[in-house]
Length: 107
Image (tube, rainbow, N blue to C red; front, side, top):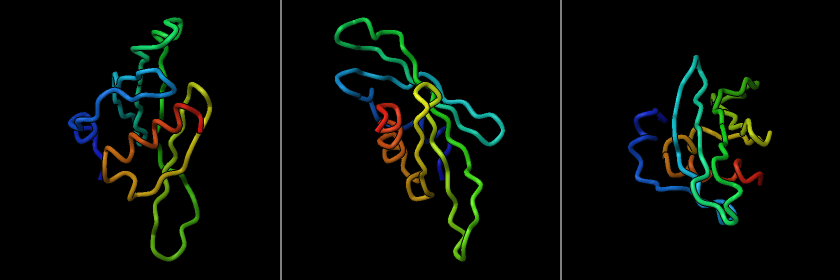
C-alpha cells in the first residue's frame, strides 16, 4: 500500500507538464489525507517559475458493493480538477505520479 516513505524513495525525477518541469517539494499527511506539493522549477517563458500545485489524496466515501473496493480522490487544490483512483493505482508510486501529473495539467 502507499506510504509516504515509498513515495519519497521512488526514483521518479521531475515531472514534465506542457513543457514545464515540476518537482515534488513536500509530502505531508494530516488525519487521513496525503498532500503533495509540487513546484514549477523550469518554464518557458520564465514567467511561470515559483508556481506551486497542491494535490490532496483522500478516501472517497462511497457505497461499496460486494467485494469491498476502496475509492480515493486526487484533487488539485490549485486548479480544482479531481480524479478518482482505486487501490491498484496506489500500489506503485510511479502509477500514482502519472495520475497526479494528469490532475495537475487538468486532463
